[in-house]
Image (cartoon, rainbow, N blue to C red; front, top):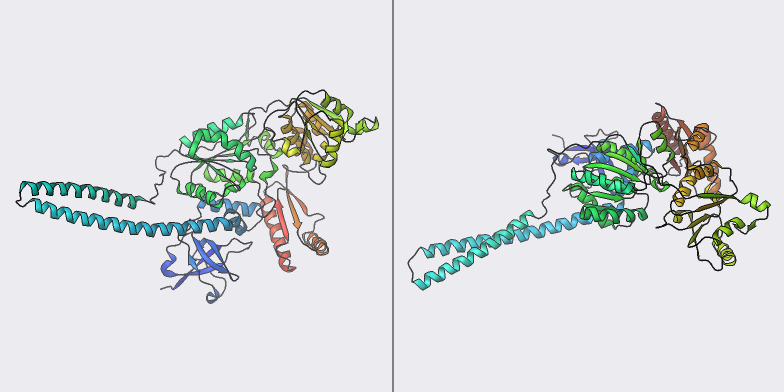
Length: 588
């Protein structure tokens, strides 16, 4: 008879292999894929996840450590969670341990452990109370039996009346004690929703909603999913958007709506995860990209709002995911309907619509009239006063009501000085571009002082993002004025005409850029600049490239080429004894 058996365990670390541990044969059958175990690795204790049973050790079995504890109280990792982790690890060229760490950060694990300990204390307390309640029931039943026996004997009428009264009192106490015992027995029992008879979700073709009232459409779709017994996830780029949707959805769904994001405490996030894992009823969840890692068991609808927003992309730490693309995979795993929402869709999504992969519904709201002022020409005509053209000054002076200035590179203190000198009698609001796109209502005028600041040279997505941002700002005003030294730029032509971003797509095709190709950025982080330069040079030589921005053709060999790149980088780190300095960013 075997004394020990072996398991592979995922740890929340950047490891390219899963450590193997031994477990006693008598407890092996209590484990399964997804079980949580406590193990020692490099002299530190971790909570890991069992990913394989009956593992075959590649080293001497005597050197394999035993598990430090079987974490039977912690929730298991579900199969859909595993599938999402594996996709992220493969696609974004990171270890599955890094994905596990993102999905279950240490605060989340500690919160789970606290909850498990509290539940165990509550269980023991409940057992003591239940024992006392059952003892009370037994005592009362004994008293009742003796009282009934007494009533069977002959007594005076007064004694019989007192005995009957005592019996009724004992019966009342017995019923109360039995009710208390039943309530204690039922506490903590989960009522799981069965899948029998439940209609399967119909995924259909992914679709893009562009109408200004698309959030009302979200609400209707979530209601339909909820009524069908399925949960919904509405993914937003940042917490500010969470509040906007929450107010609207809370009126419709009440307690069936959950919010998940960094502004919630660890306890609140853990409670949300517990509700979804237990699946007692479906919910509508609104959250930021971390909500992708919630343990959904019955996801029927996946919505990504403001899908074009760069905040859906995580840059640090690994895994450097794009939440929009991970949401598409999550929907596929669950067979859920996948919906994107944006009045200014990303070029990737626009490309998917043009190629027929996605359908498109609705039309964005008409933007305010746009006036482009060429500051280079105005400077030649001496038509500038600091950051303001005389044309813009006249527009501001002749606009009734509020006006918003969107700053670019301007120094805030200097800008305040100019506005104080030129517009002493006007109340002007100065905002960043990101703040201007979140204005709660419409204003008569918005003026972008230096639109050239929206076009950083090292960002191939600059044109796309500038157009999206200016259109979002334009939705919040009756008149939009843009000052720029690049008045002939195609972004301003598209902005003025209201045309879609097809011309930008053609430019991407001409320059062999996404979505027609895939890009992987490689970055070296090192406090020593000289060592960083040396290692950058060595790495480019090892990879036989002239730049650490690599372009891959979108073809059948893409996955294999990306995987080979990762192996080359791992080999470089090992050969040069240079671990943890090289960062890989897929789809930057």
